[in-house]
Image 1 (tube, rainbow, N blue to C red):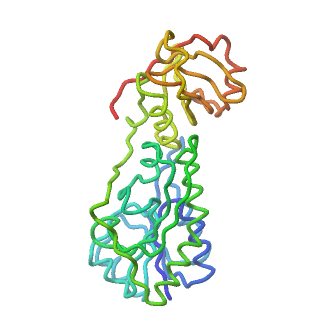
Image 2: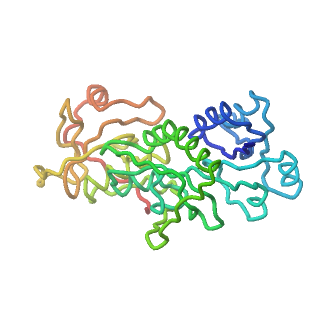
Image 3: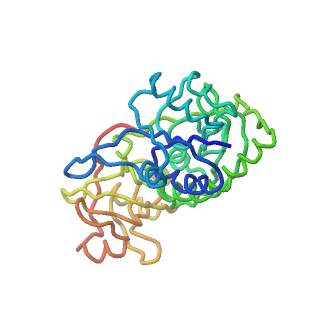
Length: 315
């Protein structure tokens, strides 16, 4: 079976490496190079780099016009495998592939259809999520389920952590789905009535309100790592939060909201919230490296009693 691979993200790298071992990958579709770093030089994503290294033809157009479609048809692909490409496909394009198109989606569909399933699961405090390999349909993330696997989300897991987990688990699931397709399996229809949807995260998603519960705040902190990252102001300086957890206890009701009320060398830096205690686990001052809470506490004088103030914005 000849496979055409579409991706623009490092989350799909392990899948790509595994697929080229077992199938003929005749082409790769990815997004155009993007400016990166201080010099804003154009940089290739890792999928494109790997494809070029393996002498696989790469397409990176801004628009999938007729010339691109015809060039892909000339490769005679049987099936397209999509994993975090970044654009929606029209029917004319999907029809190129006689064995159809499949997509790797990091949620337990029909839950969290859309572009931010990992972040949304963490933001909502879910304890379980998963990966779905689905047949592609014109309506986003609505196709038949070919393979599905769940996994646990720990309270302190970030979107970065779960993305790495999805990356490592997906290759085996994709191979299983391709074998099922080869055997004629068409998949199991989703229950549309149970569908939920998620949308883009924005820079403003990193704004927090310490009047919220510790549970809600830690979810936002963990969901926004690696982007856009939650931050707050402390003594006229920004502090970036990378990882957090929480305690349900309300032992510091008399203290200010957002106040650093305690330090526990085994649990974290305690911050008072509208309900419960926020445990800061990893933090960063802008332009410096990320520190665990012990290093941050040891390197900052008189933290206890200082008060975080929210940086304004909307969710």
